[in-house]
Amino acid sequence: MIADRLPTRREDIRLIGRTIRLVLSIPAYAVFAVLAAVTSLTLFSLSQNLTLTADLIVGGSLPLADRLVLVVEQYPFVGTNYSAVDGAALLLVVSLVGANLALVTYHLREHDLSAAGSGGSLLGVALGVLGAGCAACGSAILLGVLSLFGASGLVLLLPLGGLELSLLAVVALLLSTYWVADGMRGGEIQGCPVTID
Amino acid sequence: MTDRTRRDIVAAAGATASLTLAGCLGGGDSNAEAEAVALADHPLGENLGDWPHLGPDPFEAPATLVVLDDPSCGRCAAFHQGTITELQSEYVASGDLAIAVRPYPVVYAWGEPAAHALEATQARDDAAFWDLLDHYFTEQSSFGTDNVLTKTETYLENNTDLDATAIADDARSEAFADRIDATLSAGEEAGAGDITPATFAFVDGTLKTSFNGSQSTTTVTTALEL
Image: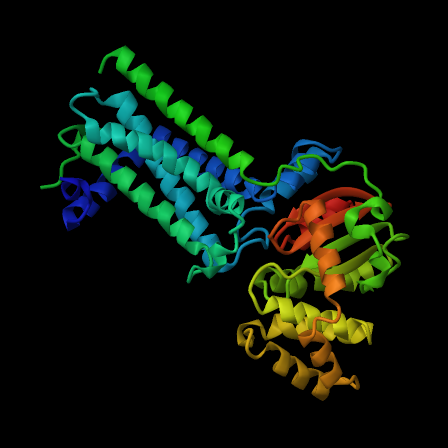
């Protein structure tokens, strides 16, 4: 039953939180999560302005310091591209991407997986990677797809003006994280059991 | 887990990530390199003198921004109220930067009649154009397709000496539709798409780059090396 695989109980949410906390308590995975989040944030931010990126950040003749300034200015709350709400949503998404990828990596490296016995984990891995890509693309992908049909204005008809896409990414990442955590039940992280009773 | 299984998972994950990111990077603007196009030869440079600008002549200025704005676009409002205001007080005032604006209605429906009203206003008075644009940005949440022209008429009546009724009538009859159409066509040709604000940056009369959104003052001055 699909409902059995959804995080509907309070214990499921606690499982997500506990698993993330245990994995990120390992310094190497915490650093990895931060790097993944920053990479995801950078990819998403630059994907919103590919011409500027190609002309002046990757190409062109600006000094390195100026190129870095242009990169950092694309981030929410540093530059002025995003409203406070959109910026906060983006930071939430990339934080989840970082945590999610750290969990996926930990799971692959430290736990025994088998294709037969860890269907949930494999699904989680696939969704985690898709979620990371999704977060990096965000509305750009959907806008791109919709514009193929001449309907990019549809996003503007959404009640939250496109913020729904970030919320969808959050849901996908939470599902993915839950499925990865669910696949780690019965295991241990640094001697601590993953399972919540 | 066997090494084979693990390799398969990592390979599948890597392939998925590559495809996803490839889709991502391919989903945006395909005009990846700014070509050395002179402002006079750029689609948005054609008859640019017919549209209002701040600062020196856009064709003679050391640096020029051509901004496509939709009066109904929230990030356009943020761009004008933040970045353009800051640029105006320093770089436009010193003659180092010209900023030309062309109404480009592609966002919410009320932006289109507002753009027509802006064109009708600018045909009579450049200064009133800037005031009306600022009014749209400041009061953005109060406008809709049903009230934009009546509110525009009231604003012009109360704040200018212009014939507000004639301007509203011109907007209703789309008397300046050819100018709106020219900007929409030029924007499309330039690759602006349906995202505003779309800004094209020229240095010494040559296209240096273009960008979307309400970029910061630091981004603009760094890009233009001001």
